[in-house]
Length: 503
Ligand code: G3P
Image (tube, rainbow, N blue to C red):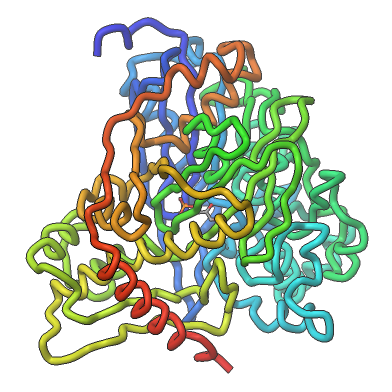
């Protein structure tokens, strides 16, 4: 409002699952302007999800221009540009032309099911867990690269000859921003690399042994760098602006929520939901279905690790109710509809659309609505949709407690779905713990901006960033223990019913 006018500023690009956006921040971490554009979701077959990477790059350029325009500033006012992105989504492109060789395979895509099963045969799902912190699942990038190498004609040969580059969306955007075929830098950061299933969590390098078991040529891989350093300088509209951070969106949200100390956690409610707990300088193994991942690394400081509980479908279930079912006209309407009834009427909705992620990692699961009777209306289903997000969070929190031995005292939340009051109340109820939301709910972009600002000395240290965190809202539990226990049991019964659907 008042002091926004004076720069300088940091801009952050969030290349997300459903849209790309750019946000300009001032020194206090306040939003100066936002521009956003959705891209097409391509569903060629059941379980397949693709994006057009060229469309995404065009959108990214548009939203950057748009955000600067809305802020009324020029590139000279932007001290650095940070990048954050939907993770695991995989693109391969021609180094000479910059043309993607295939649509990007989105993290939600399950086509590598059989490949993952094959890779785990005899040894099981945990074949690469010790090195990578991840179970074998179609979610991660490595198997997606392999699928394209096997299925796009002539691609393997070209890849081996060094003509093809791989990237998650951070690499794709940075390469294009810094010149594309004319000198673009081919890098990724430790957080994004930790989702490929190809990076060793201890050395933070590509793991030779895994590359050879997955049959992926090292020639396609980007260089792994820290999350906060100058990778290169933009060409084009932002000519000369340092490109100074990259973090997977969930890690960026951890950073934006200033969870810099061991034991701090956040949960982001977007198309999916991802709860990350800072575990300090050691990677903690999970015995309860969580992922071990890199939280962030600032320049040449020691890396910070995290435990993650990933839920594939939360906000995207609301979108599905709107776009595929036509039961609501806008995403916001889900709250009004759900609030028109007292409870779920006995219905439970387990949206295992991409299989089940944490803590189950079952690619063979598919969605169910259980407990239907003639009594159930679309309002009850709307309620079950919101409850699904809450119960899935509860399962992750239980797993975190078991792995870390730490009881949750409060949950820091952010992301688009946190504007849904009924959902936030339900969350506090099923967790039996307070839920708190900061002033800036756009913590993903904020985290990328923070990291970029640290890299160029715009902010001095993490203490300065912490001072910007302000509480905006809090929800406290109201549900009685009996109801909670009964509902949790019913939810778990419904979850059982999703498994083994795909042979
Ligand atoms: O791992 C997938 C995650 O990074 C996607 O996040 O916010 O685009 O749903 P979002």
